[in-house]
Length: 245
Image (cartoon, rainbow, N blue to C red; front, side):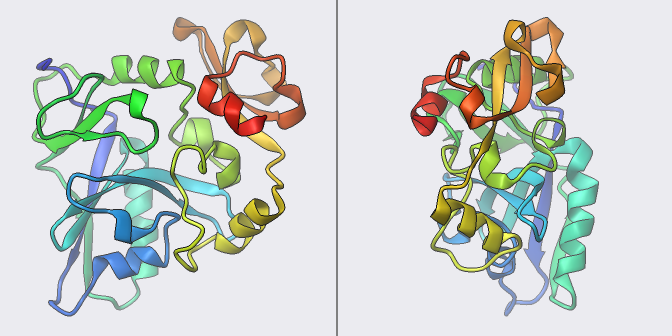
């Protein structure tokens, strides 16, 4: 295992019951796109918090920690996510705070005690532990996931309808868990098969600046929001090609 596995651009938010009768999972079940019943030891799940219209506000991984839940999110979004969850909390006795003692770690290869990324097996393995050294694995992780066509974070996904981010294909939404914020429009899109656009990661030689969310010149890729009918001739990963054909 590399001593530099820490994803320094990720942060953890801990949700804890402040009363024995309180249930953090039931609180999140009515908010996030993922079914909290699937968040089990060693089995983190991918999900998001949406706007009422079904647009992506925050994407994240959800980790089990006994009565607590840890949210693995972009570090630059952690403060805003914690504030949003606090607004929804109302008078429920739930603690919501940054977890400073742990960091998110990643390896492209299996690591003892790590969990496979729930989005796509090829993304590799993640685990939570104290930070390991002063040099993170962020650049390697970004190159790895973009090579697989998997976007994340506000700069790549923000303000896009959740199903247009490939949420179904990346296991980021449940259609049988009941209501959550943005559920009505998300369920309607799925039922009517009305996903007309997709987030895609393309070679920069195929970029369309008008559709571009962000470009990574050093990696020669462009993250874009494209109409489905424009994707037929583009270079897409197999998992995404299968979803649109």
